[in-house]
Image (cartoon, rainbow, N blue to C red; front, top):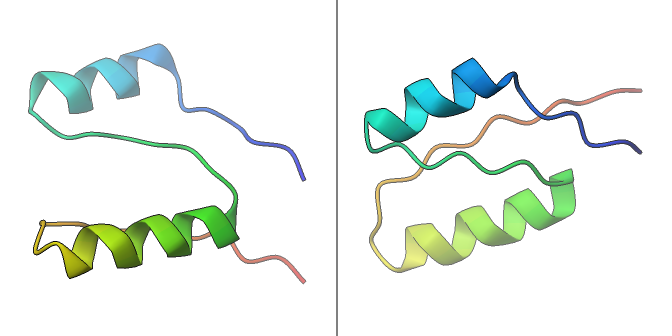
Length: 51
């Protein structure tokens, strides 16, 4: 229900290595992953599942 962003140091470490980091809910992340993968981009996803 609530998006939690990583600490600024983690964001900075990723960006300085050319790694984009996005925070979004699971449905949006799944859609984005599929779009990027269909474009042939290198993409990885991490999902937090609760239940």
